[in-house]
Image 1: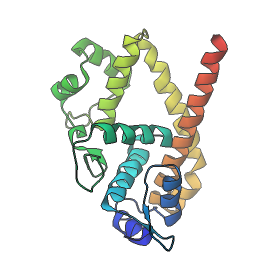
Image 2 (image 1 turned 135 degrees about the vertical axis):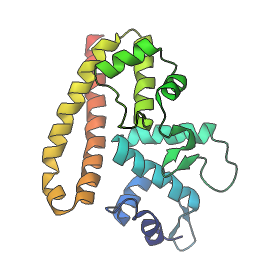
Image 3 (image 1 turned 90 degrees about the vertical axis):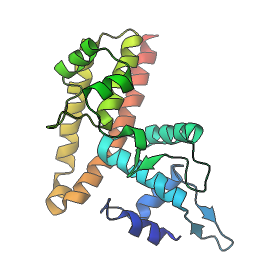
Length: 214
């Protein structure tokens, strides 16, 4: 299919999506459309699903492009689909096993103890919704917190990461207010893109700071 058709398919879920955005994600290596003899790109259903995954990760998790690329690479390596569709086992941009879960499911998926999860909830890293369910971000957050803790960082020290993220979110919110005032969807798209860039910059600065300690 042509790029305009791709945008049309996804625009219902991502109203601010544009042709330039699709081309940007292609340039970042998230999709690889087939080039036909006349130089035009032909996008497959695989490309559509990879785009859906990437756009959802940006919108819902504010992930930087580098992390989304890593996740897609991981899914490509571990996926089970052998058909023409991308080896991303996803529904509306999420892996099928990454949907909302209850407390017991969160404990099972992440491997943390009840005491560890209680501490993560107490310091505000994760929270259940009104129905007592935890979304895919909570699952990923707890998993990462467990890995960080295993590397020697006390869970209570992760509170500073939460407060740092909240300060960065305030900066992003102020930066996109003018777009939100015109269109809520455009504001969300701008916030997601800016959050991704801020996340990448934060990672670079953190690595530089750690290297300086060596």
